[in-house]
Every structure is written in C-alpha cells, then in structure tokens.
Amino acid sequence: MSGVANHYKFVLTARWIPEKSDAGQQFMSLRYWATRDLGVGFDYRPLIDQLKFNATYRLVSEDPKGWQPAILLGTSFDDFTSKGVQTQSRSYFATVSKAMPNLKFLNITPSPYVGAVWIDRLNETRPLAGINFAHKEASLMFQYSGTDSHLSLNRKVNEKLSLSAIYWGMKYPGAALRFRF
Image 1 (cartoon, rainbow, N blue to C red):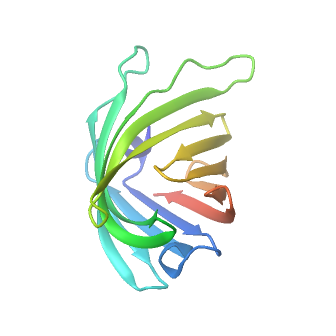
Image 2: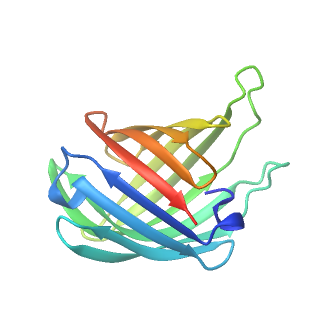
Image 3: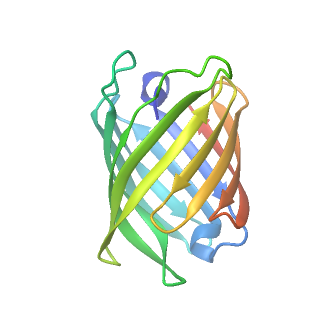
C-alpha cells in the first residue's frame, strides 16, 4: 500500500481463480483514497452479483528511515473457509507491517506483516501473517490468512498497471491485475 495514496486516488483490482466457489472465482474492487491514510470503496463479485463496502485506514505511517511500522485497520466482505465449507462474511482486520533494509546483493526489500482478522459470521479471530519480497519491477508475496497459505508473483508493467500470478491456498492457480489512476 505504500505510495498508493501519494500519486493516485483510485485503485481498481480484479482477480480470477477458476477453481474457487462462485463467490471467490471472480472478484473486483474499486477503492478511492480520500486522504493519504483513508481508502474507501466497494468489492464486487459478479458471479453472485454481490456489492459490498470496504475501507482501510492507516492509523500509523511507517517511518522509512527508522523502525516505526505501519499500523492498518480495515473492513471488507470476504469468502472464508471453515471446516471445508466456504462462507461469505464481513471481516475486520488490523495489521502491523514494516519494510526492512534492502538486501543489496539481491536488490530485494523484504516487508513482513502480522495481524489478525475477526470474521463476523464465524464469530472467530484468525491470525494474519506474510512477507513481500519487492524488487524494482516485481515482487513475490507469501501470505497466511489464518487457515490457508497463498503465493503471488507480481510484475509491474508500468507505473499504473501490475499483473499477478496467484497460487491460492497453495492449490488453486489464478491471475490478478491492479490499475491505479
């Protein structure tokens, strides 16, 4: 999220994972950055014709020269798996993230994060964790969503557009794009 609100007011994302349920197979999100720290928008799932509100608030900004991490709070309506069954629910999350010093020999910046998500319909809290390895043009992200691990390889096409290959739950391949304007 670093830098998103600095240059562009809108971020459009789209994801396609053909092996997921109808609720998770196709997903689009449009977010408006009202301020540098507040993003609000809508998520749309076309196969079930569902439109839901999302929001992210950066409570604390990361200090790029020091050790102060960023703290994010947010809400969205997602699909979750519980005991092998997928359900859709409003969720609320908090994360702490920090870009670490650049690994000069690889020119990669690791950025770990940890947090938690509370899932309304399941009435449970799950841990969140991950790490992003960012290069100038590409990044590799590993995520743990409380029950499943996910991997995505992202390639920046230009300043506004990036494309991703996804390995959702380490079993479902998919693709995504992000367009900023």
